[in-house]
Image 1 (cartoon, rainbow, N blue to C red):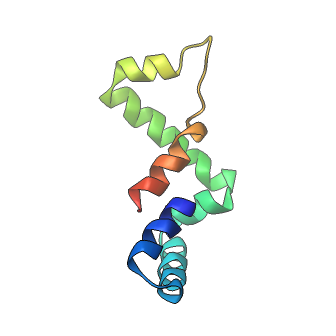
Image 2 (tube, helix red, strand yellow):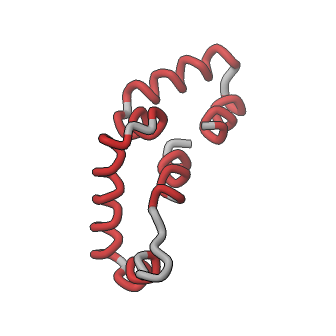
Length: 86
């Protein structure tokens, strides 16, 4: 969240930043669900991410889903989604 607000503050005053950030969070379900950390709505995004990653880059998918070191995409997907909207 700090990245998004920081970028907005570079270009807007505090009131405009508050309005833009509020509208952005409430308009885009993806951002809203990730900020609320409602796993019921977030888990489908994780499943879609893994499916797309497997189709596009099988080698990276196999490295990240190594049985000895299973990586949860929750570790990096939240930050990536936030950076997309900054």
